Length: 311
Image 1 (spheres, rainbow, N blue to C red):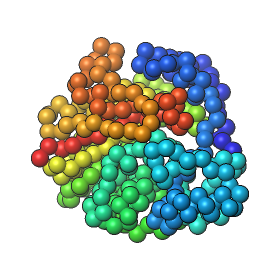
Image 2: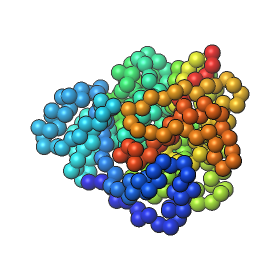
Image 3: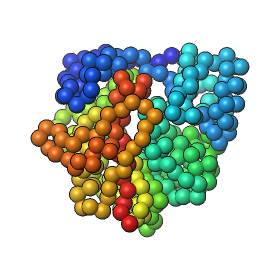
């Protein structure tokens, strides 16, 4: 059963209304965010292949729906608590939104690489990276909040992953002694895109909080790029629609010319990154970033940019 959705109050309507001119088919968007959120799961292919998992689950009476474009993703229907099944506790799957699976897929990790997830908890993306690497290599999963790293560790153990190292540095102060082949940065954000997930949107109650979030995001991205080896790639993702936290943050990182944006290919309908917002202009290459809205993909909203550090 889908989580409860908060009624669209006047404040939330005003928050979304500021994006009326940048969200395509805005009325369909408003309809989509009021719909129940589907229970998406990611098959843990370190334990079982998607085919055998499908056969086993359907034999057990579960109703599954495939997701075109992500082989390991499925929609699980009719289960009130997908995080309380025997199959879940055995580590055969992870509960994860469809759009939340995209950053790790775009990062394209390879076996044997050393990869950093700078803001890793609760662990959906870090464990997905390890899975895509075949659990061969090293994933450094960092998160400053200790209570969140407990959840991260529990997922690593439940899924049977051996290649993830958990640490608890403040992201902006992560030690510079090691360069990483790839970095994933999914920083704290206003989380407007999770509205239909039944989560209370944290879109910045005051301008002061909003400015603080942007400062944190810029600092984290600056550190993440410093930790990336020359020629390495980085994925920056958020679950918010706010250009201040998305294109503006990435644009700041591109100004020194040492980093370039890479094009992103998605199996789902999506929109391009913005090149301007409220009289502020961004680099033309920002169209290579992607925005995914709930009426395009039956999930929550996401922004993703793929960057490469020039050799």
